[in-house]
Amino acid sequence: MKDVLPAPALDQLFRQARTYNAFSGDVSDETLHALYDLLKWGPTAANSCPARFVFVKSKEAKARLGPALDEGNYAKTMAAPCTVIVAYDMAFYDKLPVLFPHTDARAWFDTKPEDALERICLRNGSLQGAYLILAARALGLDCGPMSGFDNAKVDAAFFAGTTWRSNFLVNLGRGEPSSIFPRSPRLPFDEACRIE
Image (cartoon, rainbow, N blue to C red; front, side):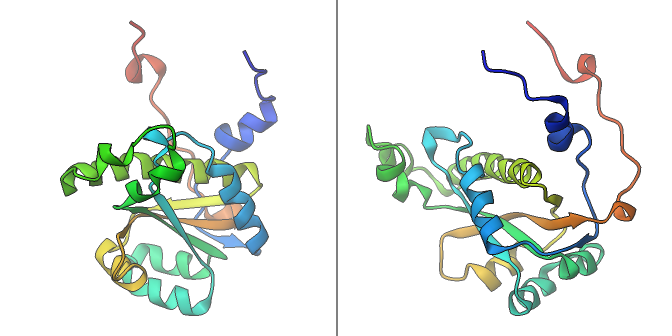
């Protein structure tokens, strides 16, 4: 069994980490590369890695994203140093000869109907989006994940003519403490879990 992470690390990743609504600072391209180099190691089914990430930083890219945002998410997203479009590739299986080389895993997926592929992509791409949040926290960034946007507009603006589809967004930067709400409770073990 591996050593348990020290309490400050667990606090940074989970117990004291919060969802922020305002950010400052800069998120360098170097940091984004380091972020991906951490999150890519999280497990997915058949190492399928269907998530795709667009790091929206430029004014031009933010202007393309803006019309898709719900009113309540617009200002904070436009002001965030970086917004990640966590997406997934419906043709993820084309990468399986490289990602899962010891057998023909592509054949497990390439004839599945679209609704089945979308479930696989959402499940595993969402896992990868969660790994992104934890990797960002591990690198000292704060996060503001959200779903309040029009997926079809994001897909038209960023993924037209591709097999990529948007899943959710994550604002990244240095969180402004004044932007967080009081911490909401979580379910206790006995209401959320069973040991059988």
